Length: 492
Image 1 (tube, one colour):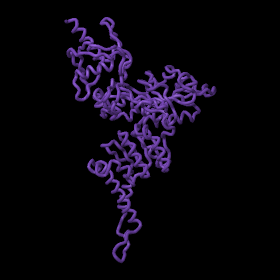
Image 2 (cartoon, one colour; image 1 turned 45 degrees about the vertical axis):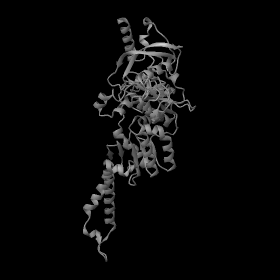
Image 3 (cartoon, helix red, strand yellow; image 1 turned 180 degrees about the vertical axis):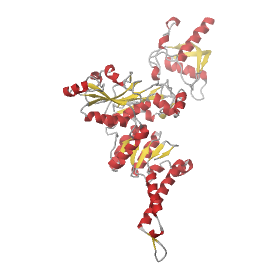
Image 4 (tube, rainbow, N blue to C red; image 1 turned 30 degrees about the vertical axis):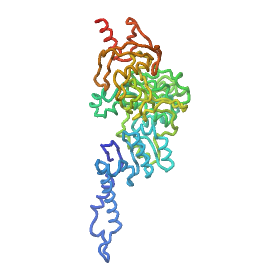
């Protein structure tokens, strides 16, 4: 195993075995292995085997050195391992969606089986990569040891015992949809994680991507956008908290997760059987799996750093994929705003400040949202209200590049309320730790116009001070701006 720490990519070489074989040849070599010839000693078959073994080891060591050297990698290309003729199996484990897809295509085109550890790349390009692998007589598979493959193995066991799959689930410890690379710093530093990567774990995007990969591999669906995500103390409690007769259609299994449950870091499967003998048997067996007809099966761990090599062996030796997107796009993960986003803003992708991802069933009617795996570098052409929709907020927005502050303010108020206003004075400025935006609150006077909903507004209304809906305000700055206004009015 050679690990390129700079790109977090792992490539299986098997150098140790070849090097050991070459050294054994070398230790056994003596002058008698060289036969005399008219122009000097002639290499025997034994010596040729030694020479080829040493050359292969030297070549592999040179490849490793090139992968670990930034300058050499830049010169030779970041897909060097995918092109290397000495490799049989390529593991794609980068964090880049586009590069991951490109590396996998290159590896397949050069005759290598591909083990995909980059689940975002699998979600976007998996169906095509699986087709390309099949066309070339190669194996394309996701990597063992992470939740999708671990769940696939557990599902196989449950179905082999005669149960029908109702739900395949992840056990997640913590969820904060609005985490960002700044607020996550303490937790990421404690775990030694990249800030964006840790954010994608915490805001649930990574969870949704992995469950979408499983759903697309087995033809599963989600009960609701983002899954149900029930908070329970123990995974067995899922049977009492969810009404499976209502959410399961009796045909297609569901993907979901539970939050804060034991065993931490595990996965679970809910199976169904209406066989009376099996239900009676399960009633007196020691494991507490349920009382029927629904039963919970668990695996209390997933250990990708130990289990990954199983998928390499399956691909190389058995020509078998553990899991691949055989069912196409049954689900996808779509971008949802973490905060109000405004026209002209550029989305910053998975694990960023702008959006998180939720898994949804694909409708294929042209009404789907923006896949979160494509939400990097996308410029918005209209405002998006984000998770604070249906709450009250003061009219306002972002300042366009080169636009005067007061012009931006009057423009935003007109767009949202159809009122023309005059700016009186600055009321207060707001900034908060971990936030990139400075917010300015102004006092204005209405000049003309008819109060009605405008761009991005569902409803507009004037509230007397005594009727302000304090419990339905969208943002902290909305509340603090109103408090500052009321204090200034009382003072005057």
